[in-house]
Amino acid sequence: MPVLAFWLGLSAELRCFVVAGLGLLGGALANWMIYRFAYFNPRPISPWGPRPEGAQPRTFLDRLPVIGWFLLRREVKWHGSGFWFRPLLIEIGTAVALVSLFRFETQTGGLLPLFLRSSPFLELFEPYANQIFFTHAILFVLMVAATFIDFDERIIPDVITIPGTLIALVLAASFTNWNGEPIGGMSFMPMITPQLDSELLFPTAFVPTTFEAPWFEENPMWFSMSGLIWGLGIWTVWCFALTDRRWSGVIVRRRGFGRALQHFRNGLFHHPFWKVLAGIWIVGLGLLAAVWTVGGPHWEGLLTALIGLAVGGGVVWSIRIVATWALRIEAMGFGDVTLMAMIGAFVGWQAALIAFFLSPFAAIAIVVIRYIITRDTYTPFGPYLCAGTMLSILFWDRIFNYWLAGNLLLMGSTLLWLCVAMLGLMAFMLFIWRLIKTMFLKR
Image 1 (cartoon, one colour):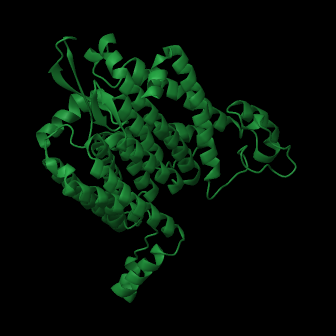
Image 2: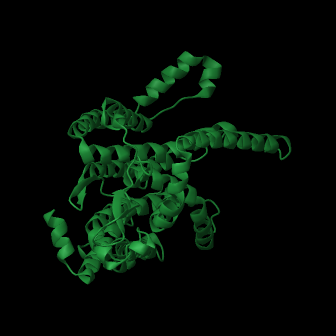
Image 3: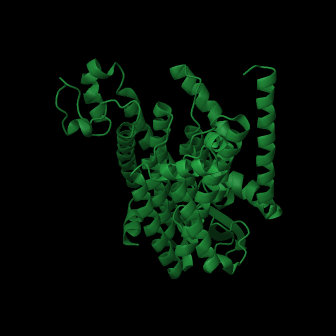
């Protein structure tokens, strides 16, 4: 790849400088999305939007990252004191975070085991590490926008997660080379297998963590018609999940199943957006079939992203359904489902699972910081998932290679039934808790 070769030909310091510039632009893009997609409390803060009546006209300098927010301090009369401070920190923070992530993934080999973080292997790993970084950088900017929109609106808009998921699928269908061998996916974390390289005299066998990791059983089903059916099925369920679904148990009890079904059908086609979704679904079916026909690393990478989408979104969706049934109140928003589906498409089902289980630990810090700043005790779940995703990347080797991979090898198919049992146990515990609140706490 000429672009990658040119990029790797630059000095490490120059690449960090370029990444910092891209980080500022990424932070500006995140700010644009935060204020552009604010549904409930739109504020004319954004330098890309209309200016308040009576304010000076916005100029090109007002739209520059960081500098523009210093210049826009002149609008405190309309927006309030300090309105510019958070977006400025978002742009600076994004630049600093991406430079740190770049050094972690490409310069120090942070995704690899400690015994492989030496010059000979890092030189071999660097081309793929840079591709991993740029896909993770895209995911990071999208998560920054989703996080702050969720803070402000308590909703994660589909206009972020739908394009983000599509970008992840396109990148996954691309492929790169490792030691001359094509491998699928451009954002899946590395997994090291213990094979001895005769020249370098230490283990250097590298494979991306695709959908079949860590078992890597040669099952032709995934590359046959059965694999295509699974892929088309996941794609269809994702597209259907994005529709305006309005199933009402109250209508079933009062007016019967037929009226509830009619109400559900009317909801599907009520908003004109169903036409866009139908177009995305039909085009996607054709593209998935085309990639499956090509096969090889293209299909392996795309199927990995689709399974990551299904597991990431499916885990949150299942918990949402079970908790809502047990508590009889809506538990978690559906934006959390689409967000986790996007994350799973970017990083694969293994990292998505790790992110989900790390999110409560990240929540502790987020809740404390948010309460100190805003005195608001309510924090949406989306920021937890985004923070958990970054933790899964930063601690990937320690958690996956040294713990999760071995346990997955031991559990095998038992893992699925264990997850089902945990869902059932959670439903039972939440149901008992609702009864306790009803009977003794009068709530």
